[in-house]
Image 1 (cartoon, rainbow, N blue to C red):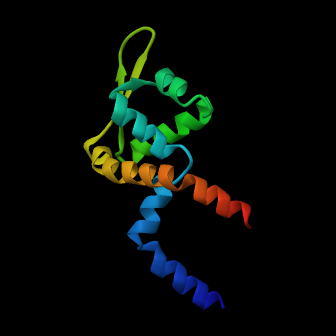
Image 2: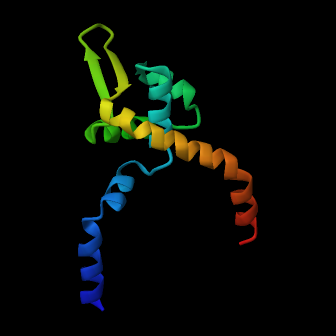
Length: 120
């Protein structure tokens, strides 16, 4: 049984869809990208106000992860007090048509999903 599980794990480690979705398929990443795409460069507190139900810790972790994978750029200005701004990168912008499509699909199908979920 272990051999089979190991073989399956090895096969799917190379799966681009699985690996990419793992990077930003959490609750907040797509919303951060959406806000940066819509509003342009933003400071941390501005993003926090737009996403008031996201804790500062979670927003910080999400921004760091998106920066690490190249979807968000972080610019630190040598000022007192320090100013940090976030913007969507070209790679992030290339993802946005798909994110917007997913958001449109979710909006159109939300009631059906909730109704079906209630049937469980």
